[in-house]
Image (tube, rainbow, N blue to C red; front, side, top):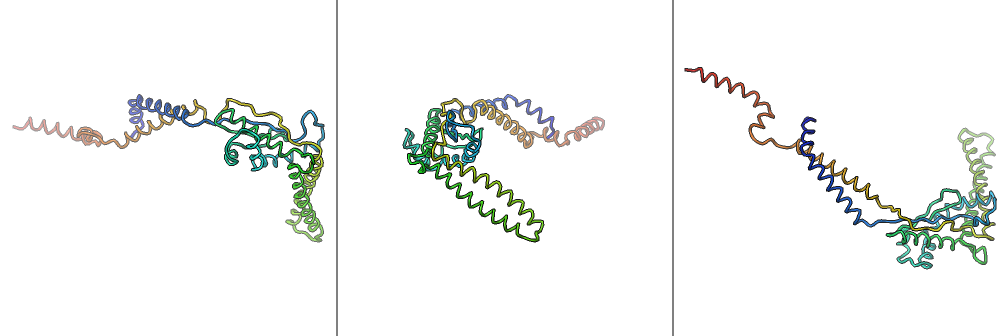
Length: 295
């Protein structure tokens, strides 16, 4: 089928295609009303002492930044979520709550964000605030100081870094003691020295953090989650537009298929499409003239 034939067919059936696009858009709008909308709210937490007590201690800031990743993982652990359910009006199980909360690092190095999701903005706000408060409670130093969960996490980091430091130091000593080294061994020695330097810096930060955690809390809610209008569900206008576009495209494709596979009806259309009709007309005319001339 030629392009001009398809274009004529599309123009001829354009009202039906437009009607199909409108119908698809209406169906998409109906889907947005039926599909449950999911709202989100975020609570921002500061890893470190409160802002009014914070001093410009570069070591403490670096130590706090190094702990953000650990706290992000701790926010969705079972103990924290269980405490959030116990200390709030949230209902359901720990598994249910885990499906409605997430955590990530904030825009600044010592900030983290706890995000809650719910069927309404108030539900999302309650989830985010409950988990944030539970995380602060779980990581705050207890009256005895060293019993804090956060201090225990920092202590585990110190142990892990110390083991890594000792292993790298042994590797550097071994490679340095070689009288003759290959190119690969020289490259390995440079890499081991660089890793040893980075590990030593991280170990100093973790040790400093562990010491400072005993006397002051290291996690504070900087901004509680507030109800907001934004929703994580697809926007209504975008959904309607997408439905209308899909309907128009399907209608155009349907016309293309119909024109490509439509069977001609009648002997006249068959002859016209095959070209036989054009060849047969002169022959019939000559036969007619010959019959008129015959005696």
